[in-house]
Image 1 (tube, rainbow, N blue to C red):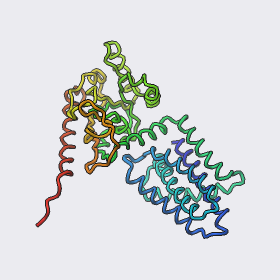
Image 2: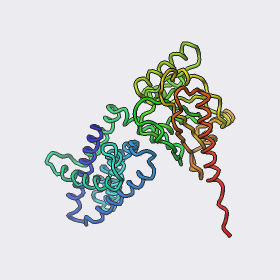
Image 3: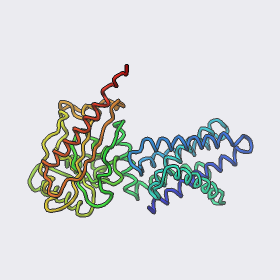
Image 4: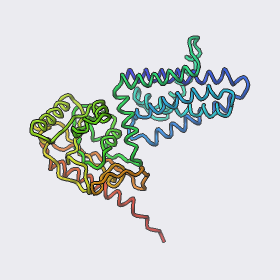
Length: 372
């Protein structure tokens, strides 16, 4: 929460500074109304995008994109000061960046209805304009550079900011995703998510659908790849291996320790990505992880992914560019299983979620019957 307030203050100062620079350099020669309208339209457009395409109430993944647009628009406004139409467009981009950054951060700091949030954003921008009139302020290029440096600093000091941004981008490689049953996942405390496995980005999809950070159990050889190792370490993934009894026990012990610490852990209980689209048998590692505890076990099902980008069809990786399908991918979270539930119980619960998602998919695929 403290960092959210810091983010908000930084964004308000940069936005206010940019608007004041536009006023000082252009309002004396050209009308201020087009610039103001462009900013407000950009703010409204950005708000609609954030509202329509956020799967969770606090989608911090918008913030890195917002900071990037913020820095770019500040630099563009400075470079185009002699070209009034481009400055007007830059003010619109500044409005979009404001919505992308302030709306999610404001929701993180103080959740409230969307309309009230927009009012607070408008008030905050006015406050930022006032702050930007202080004597100690730089030029627009300085504001752009400061925004870039501040964003990099956030990536270094705030792991959640980095992870949410990565999940947000990676999870949208597959377009058209609908989420069902998020409320079944506890907002705090330990819980074990048990999911089927269809693509190489299942973790991105699940992680970007929940407001909590998820610790995934990932196949250990991926930790040995240069880039993948950095990603796995950053998201605090738990390496899992089946090469020997000792390594298996160590993987299960790490997962249990994460749960004891109150983390949200996800296991792909099939062990492998499906090659046929069918649900495979669940391995019994889940039973050992939660043995003797009352930790909630949440079944998860990913529907509509087989045959899409980064899935395996007949053992071959699908590499085609993602396309928006008429029927969306569905991520379903089921109610917690009772204490003592086994891997077979979890598989049955995931299969029930699969059947429900399949019925919904069929209804969407079936064209409506014309009325005589």
